[in-house]
Image (cartoon, rainbow, N blue to C red; front, side, top):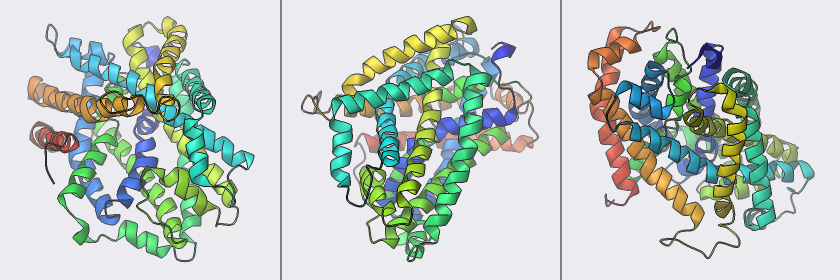
Length: 447
């Protein structure tokens, strides 16, 4: 990449990469998945698997990106010329395109709830299940907020790496952490909140079973935006003086911190008012607004919470669009603005059937799934695990071990044996874990 497209600082890259990882998976999916899988024991398993499995793959993507200095497709062409490995990058770019097409739908729901909250539509008298069903089924609301979400995403990405994505993340990520911390403090001061803390942080090992283990493994795998080449794209804008080990470690722990704070906001409040933690995907859209109404200034606090969720959703969307955009413009930065808007429009159009999947297209299914569910299944159950598996195999088996370890030491102050441990985990442990998650997701393992 040209010097003009490099990150302007180490912290800018770390915050942006963390922003890519910290999305709906950390704030929406993690709490309800933990709530239905034993709480604290799930969190403990998630932490262990993120360190052992997620971190090595994240480092592999960082290696491919920085070593090549190219977009997701050209990176593999550079490191493995005249081989079919570039199809891994192509699959990642396609995955980001499709993923953003339906991710923007959920991002639109979040923006709708921000508006609902600030307009006063969320109150003690609100039927929250009806409100949620109307939000996702009304075609004008669903598409309108999806358009707004894509406009916000494109308006940032078209500004470039340092002046667009990095600048936005420098503001959004610190605000997200600070406001989450304040909300967690408020939640922890509620009468009866300690029952929620115990559920979330005091492991009950009797809750451990094969299903919870594999679910935690899958959550750790998806928590860092792995397998779709987004981190390859971001790392391509790095200079060799960046310590990849410390950067990846920072990204992992920032993602873990947000998951922890999300749990400390949600579970103490849920337990304090007698709600069930295993509410599933409706936790933040149906249960949580009801919980906030029982707290003084709950309407304002819920509005702030949903604003934070929208920040996290947008920072992930930036990475998805950048992955596609970088592959299309091939470092021709003068094409960035126009191409970003054209790609944004194309992604929006592809995503419209997903936006309508909960309303007028709810009864139109393909292989028994709505358009939204089909795209979600293809990306999260097939393309992401296959992409991550191939990235691990490419880095650990197809690249020369000494060359990989030598590159990883550039700019690093970590002792060389850390690189050896990472490479060994990437070569053996990560592929086995990915195959287990893949088999479980597809129902090939009977639990």
